[in-house]
Length: 360
Image 1: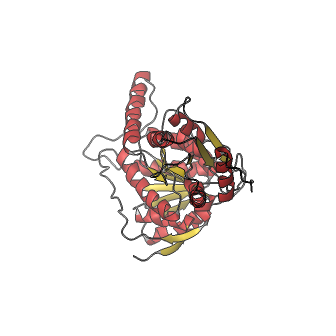
Image 2: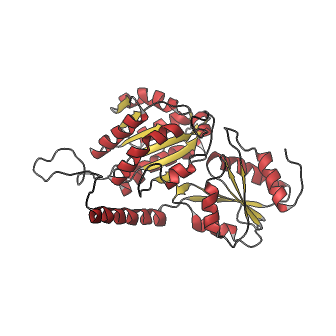
């Protein structure tokens, strides 16, 4: 089938259109402003609503309202913008509303810069806002996978009546790659007649709320939501293992575009007679603890190396997966918008394995 060259930000917008999204509320922020630029044209073409709000706070609460009425809606932003949406994200999760958020991560903390980063891992997986809630969090490594996961995000949001966040980075937003849209299984919206606020003639009104002043009632809701997250953790783990069929001396764990760099390193090292495995979380919540543990404890593995475009956040989940009394876990990361190079990863692997080699 024919492929078309797409910029990542535009592919995100088109994927949402193909998934049936007809409401997009946003506030521009680099490096994902092209999503809004693209959808300002495309949404009207499909009968949808494009609205640039006065702030990220306003946009996220528009998502809350539109999702309550059963609309298939989403927004995109980048790091500081997601921070401003955090309160509404907690409300939307508490109200059990399906919605999709896309974070094209830039480097921080603070305003930081507009170059790529993975410094929002904890924000996405541990909760950006207040209270006991979880987002399903998906992390693509290519533009094609970004398209696939954005479409999947709408299906999962409907399935669990829970927000889903797709976490890319500045590279995902700005680079261009061929994308295939035809043949993708596009989910159909689930029946929402039992909970939406669309008028109540002839029936009792549906009430969507997040305020529960009775502590026992609120606790019951917390337990009910915890059961939903348990189902997610059981059924929605997504992970790729690369070069793990043959025995390997060291396991690398990386996600997103950093994993692409690591794959190049793994291939180069294999040509030099050094076999290294890679485990790539695709769902960063739920995290693939079992697969990471299994790959790390394979016979002959001497160490684990976590590579991130940050100062180290996913490494805590990797350590938890492996356990404190297992093999050593090491870290290599770059920050400030710098991307780890294949040569840097290769040098770190050789250092850990005692193979020498000068650092680049």
